[in-house]
Amino acid sequence: MSEVVKCENLTKRYGGLTALDQVSFTLESGRIIGLLGPNGSGKTTFLKMLLGEEAPDKGTVELGANVKVGYLPQVITFDNEEYTVIQAFRDDISILEGQAREYLSKFMFFGNSVFKKVKALSGGERIRLKLSMLLYEDINLLILDEPTNHLDIDSIETLEEALEFIEDDELVEITPDAIRLRKKYLKEHERLQYNKQRQRAAIK
Image (cartoon, rainbow, N blue to C red; front, side, top):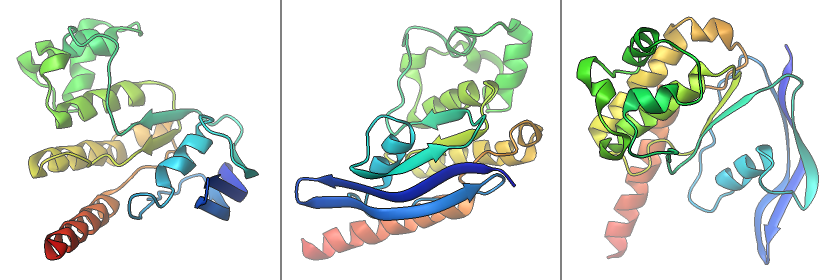
């Protein structure tokens, strides 16, 4: 199996705070992982270093040869909020409208919903649209940064359904090295968030 990510003695500090301390691991193709932990535990810091947006104080983190990353950030933005769903999807690619509508239907954009403006989309719809755009590209590593943040229960279920499509569809064959966040990690994230809310309520 080929290496997708290799991390050696990765260390990152912010003043007196140590976000990551000599983290080492190798991630091989075909694996599905989830980074779980409370706020401030270094999850986003690690992703930023993996994406080359921040430099470690010590150590290295490297992507494997031929790895192409698709990144779904915590805050979903689009180049033009006035675009419709189908306009946003087709903006930088060459694809017929009929083919685009068929593809978007896999992400639960059916019928006239493809003509809904981006600015009017719910949080869950924005995630589904961004996922559709990422997965149409030739990526083989998909990173989701806290995808359930600020989502209601219905939107979380919609996201889970979209991720099920990633596992069930032919895209799995096209992207064998993809890291996909499965339901069990989403459920664990929900459990951590629930416990944190209960702790805050108890303090009050």
